[in-house]
Image 1 (cartoon, rainbow, N blue to C red):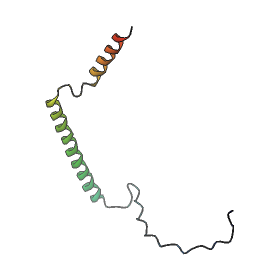
Image 2 (cartoon, rainbow, N blue to C red; image 1 turned 45 degrees about the vertical axis):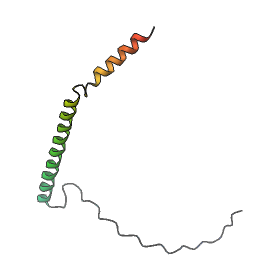
Image 3 (tube, rainbow, N blue to C red; image 1 turned 90 degrees about the vertical axis):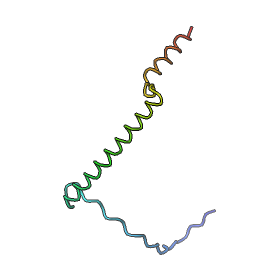
Image 4 (cartoon, rainbow, N blue to C red; image 1 turned 135 degrees about the horizontal axis):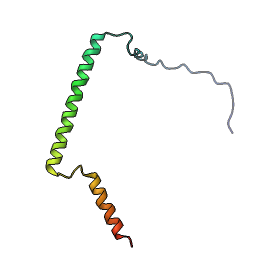
Length: 85
């Protein structure tokens, strides 16, 4: 059986301070930093897209039908339909 009694609060451990909340878009902040950040993000995005394009080219060189999803689906559907009595 559980015993109910007065429980005193134990001292809480100190928590580290929270990081500051981000400022709303368009308010507070240096516009020059925003431009530099945008340029950096765009450069990273362009590099990412270039890497993806290179991977796609390599995949197509290895197997030209690697992205032929619809054709594979259609062939499987035809096989399944022809097997049914």
